[in-house]
Length: 150
Image 1 (cartoon, rainbow, N blue to C red):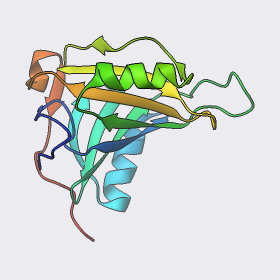
Image 2: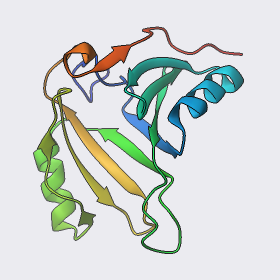
Image 3: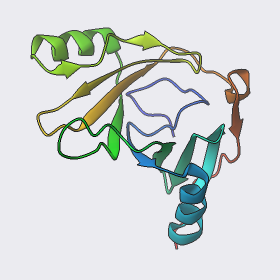
């Protein structure tokens, strides 16, 4: 499904908002989420990251324990696809939000930056620059099918 908010990119889920969940063991989490909740693994990125789909929605499962610089570790973030990343970034910077660097172009065809809201939730904003076959940067496309309704 292509929406008004983004260009198609085979390296990205088509959803506009994509939760990113951190797990200490990505493979174990992916297997559990697929077997238990009915997700379908769409794209595998090494052993450290996978994209899962379910009925038109998507999540990203990534490795790590989060940043525990304050009282609670980061266990999740949200990825939001936007049309004009530079304009969005300027708005966020002007608002005084904490940002973790300017928009950066990545080999998987996305330009992204990350900010933090007052509740310490991390938000990565992403603009598709071009469609990239995941094999070009080391990803393995496993399924174009969406997860099924149980």
